[in-house]
Length: 218
Image (cartoon, rainbow, N blue to C red; front, side, top):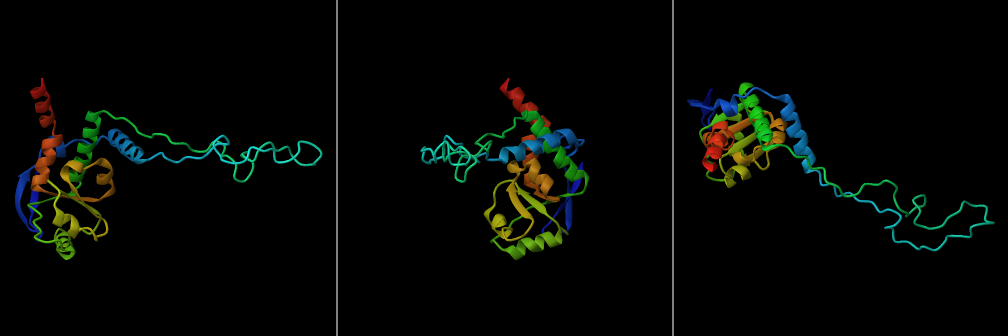
C-alpha cells in the first residue's frame, strides 16, 4: 500500500510503501474489543478498601443492658448497623488484570493501524524537526495538515521539543511509536506518524519481523 508523505506545510512531497502485514490487515472486531477491555481493566488499581467490624477500632464494651431498656439488643459499637461501625460486603483490594496472548495483542494493534490507514485517518510526514518548543509552531503544522480533531502524533523516539510544543493543545497526544496502543488509537481520530515512526512500527509488529526473530532464536 502506498501513502503520500507530507511536509510541514501540508504539501505532498513523495509516496512511500507501507507494509500490508501491518497497515493492510482486515479488521477483527472481536480481537480488538478483547484487547481494549483488557487494557482498560489493567488500568484499574483495585485498592479500594473498607473495614469490617473486626477491623474497626472502637470499644468492645456492651453499650447498654441486655434487658429492661425497651431498646434493641446492642452488643458492640462495631456493629455495621451503627454509625462508625464496620461495613457489610464493602470493597477490598483485588486485582482486575486480564491476560491475553501476545499474538492476539499484536494482531489487535495491527488491525487498528490498518483501520486508520484504510479510513484515511493516517497521515505520514517526513519529519517534525522543531528547533525550539513552540505551541504556535505545532498548531501551524496541524492546520497545514488540515487536522481539526483529536490526533496522536507518533515519532520514532521521544522528542522533547515536539512534546513541549503540543503540551497545551487540547486533544493532541505525543508518543513514541513503540508505545502506540489500542486504547489510545481508538480514543483519538487521526494518527500522524513520521516516516521513521512508520518504519519503527513495521520493524516491531510486522509479521515478517516476528518470524525472523523466531527463526534467529531457533
